[in-house]
Length: 400
Image 1 (cartoon, rainbow, N blue to C red):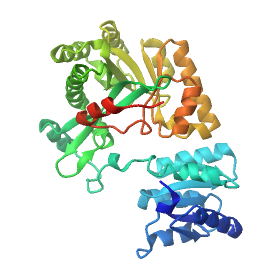
Image 2 (cartoon, helix red, strand yellow; image 1 turned 30 degrees about the horizontal axis):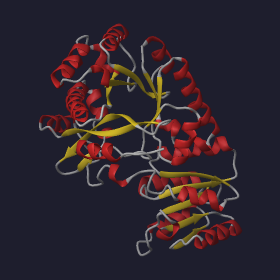
Image 3 (spheres, rainbow, N blue to C red; image 1 turned 120 degrees about the vertical axis):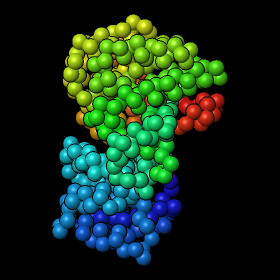
Image 4 (cartoon, rainbow, N blue to C red; image 1 turned 120 degrees about the horizontal axis):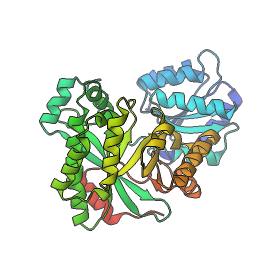
């Protein structure tokens, strides 16, 4: 989005810096620029119902009365739809920590700017306003804060759960190579419900396999349709470690592929680390059997789960997926850059593919390309979509 389509709020205790930044935004064409000397004044402005809605807040960290961190907490609770740009002259490692805190509060964080603020950097972050958290992917605000187990199981019985597909693209060639099937609940009252509303509830109650096989069967059917349409793409589906305690799991998954007439070589099972591996022998037996039958195995959300290094040393993975928490804004964070590069190097030394999740900007894409990452997935390429939209996307896709 361009500045002339947006309303801004500058939160800065230094009068000269605040006025300078406001003038810069106005010279860029901003519709309006309001100003506040600290977090408390900023909240009062946001609470004023008669004022035009604020699209982007630019906020300092060190301020009297209410500092930036306390203000961000309030933003996350009451104004999560407003984008945030952090401004500070503090140490980069500390700023990176505050960025993570802001994301944890649910804020639409565009990034951080080191003072003094430059026009070019500001323009880059403003342009990301719609890319950071696309409106289409948000859970409908009318939905309840939580669903009961019975609510979710009733939705499964009524066939309300569908896979949405997010493309995975080869960074070197720009060609789409596969898709990941992501569970969505198409709720009759609340619209599209994301996984955070139901995955944990099912897992806690030992019912996650009900959802897993629903998505697996529909994804296998979609894979066949893609191939019949001339798109020989791989299909990835998430499997929790807790599901691997059932020694019949590999046979059940193989049977799904057989019934859908899909070659297992086109299927990747992404092993999520939402729980510790409690039955190592059974899990390893399942994974070894699946690998022997041609399935790909991916270690999902690498670096965030239980004993990632131990898992990758004892399971024959074919892919390593770097978690989006490391990829988002890593191009501006030295620590994250090192983690991402090290993960890519590790994957290549193990002779397996490396996929970066959460790629949201062209800058991230270019940085990953320079690091020789194999595949990318994220909003810069496409948001998750239904099968009909995916087939159209595959027919028109192009990126370099």
